Image 1 (cartoon, helix red, strand yellow):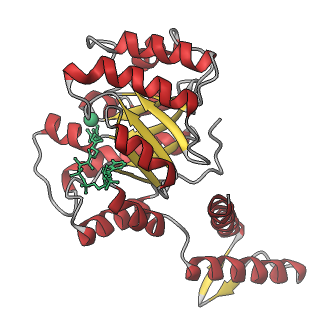
Image 2 (spheres, rainbow, N blue to C red):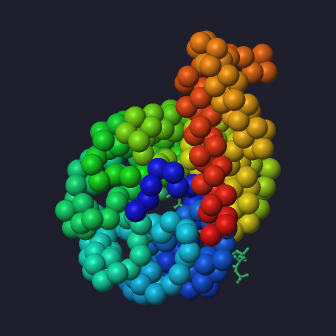
Length: 290
Ligand SMILES: CC(C)(COP(=O)(O)OP(=O)(O)OC[C@H]1O[C@@H](n2cnc3c(N)ncnc32)[C@H](O)[C@@H]1OP(=O)(O)O)[C@@H](O)C(=O)NCCC(=O)NCCSC(=O)C[C@H](O)C(=O)O
Ligand SMILES: [Mg+2]
């Protein structure tokens, strides 16, 4: 099961057809892996990739990394076989933490997969214009545990152009983030396509972190470290959280409801955030130690 405390700073896509990359990922510092059967796999390779992935997830040890399988849509030639294969594999003991459904536009898209594959949490690719408009009702689905932004498909639907500030993406990113937070879901930002551009990736990670995303989806191992750092609490944030908690405890002991730290007020609600920061730092430390 995927729990709320689990870090999702770095979520690496691996094409289900690439045996070498599937092997390499066992040692990569990714918080989660999306084993992809959809857009990263060519049509004529899909049946072989599905069989390979089912076998790999039945046998391989990916340690603490969350294992998420992205299936093809049920409206494609491959989606139903993907679902049937993984329903069987999971029942037989394959370790799959979630099934990721592409191009979710309505809650009915989730119902259709939920009816075919019991027990495993579902995640939704949020990447259609209709999906953005229905984000709240999608997030409310009882089987949904996470959302992944599909900014490439969204840009395609919108007809928008890439800009470093992601102006065209802001409405969709914001709607999905609101929906995910309203229903207590994990939500991970979209990919940065220029995988050799470290400065561009860092800027996009920081924007996503500032907005409130839990992490970023990635396409290449070289992107992992940047996302892991950007989405982890910094030393300064951890230090501030500790000082806020200490100052507020002291204020409360004196019968006050407000403390001041670094010239800013600290109230009960800031302590909730401070405790979340420390909990996230501890979860990351535990992950690194495992
Ligand atoms: C982008 C790539 C095609 C680049 O591949 P390549 O040229 O082979 O890279 P390198 O030679 O630099 O690779 C170095 C080593 O790293 C391994 N590798 C590469 N990529 C991965 C990976 N994703 N996971 C694990 N390991 C990886 C190589 O095997 C090399 O290993 P070694 O032999 O030991 O040196 C390629 O990175 C790639 O295919 N990336 C994934 C692309 C993908 O998954 N795309 C689909 C998801 S994005 C999407 O669909 C988003 C969404 O839906 C939307 O709409 O936005
Ligand atoms: Mg997509």
